[in-house]
Image 1 (cartoon, one colour):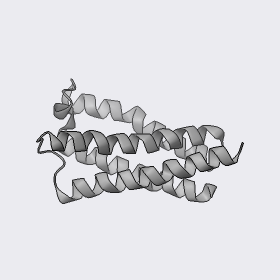
Image 2 (cartoon, rainbow, N blue to C red; image 1 turned 60 degrees about the vertical axis):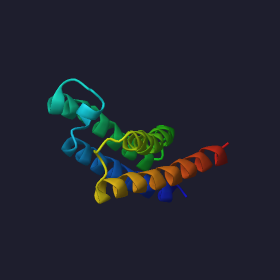
Image 3 (cartoon, one colour; image 1 turned 90 degrees about the vertical axis):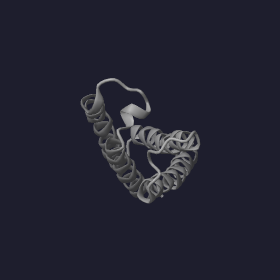
Image 4 (cartoon, rainbow, N blue to C red; image 1 turned 180 degrees about the horizontal axis):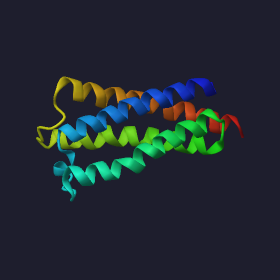
Length: 126
């Protein structure tokens, strides 16, 4: 089951990273009224991408911290879907393309599976 989690983490991370690439194209900093434009957006993503990769390494090493990173990543995917759905329902035009919607929906589904498997492993270990 742990190997399944590693692959779920990796695939979820790929979809979240692709969403962030789409976010740069959509100028997400304007949607959230974040300062710094593209520069601020990119600077914030250095530590975020680093943490995603650290989580994968910890998970591959079988460390407990990897499970914590897995929960955080899965919650991030659920949050990304929900916040963008909120903006779409409020009439915002960003993230309405077929590929944007596919990435968001796939991220939600993968994140829910990943979170479930992570919790199963955590509670099974007790």
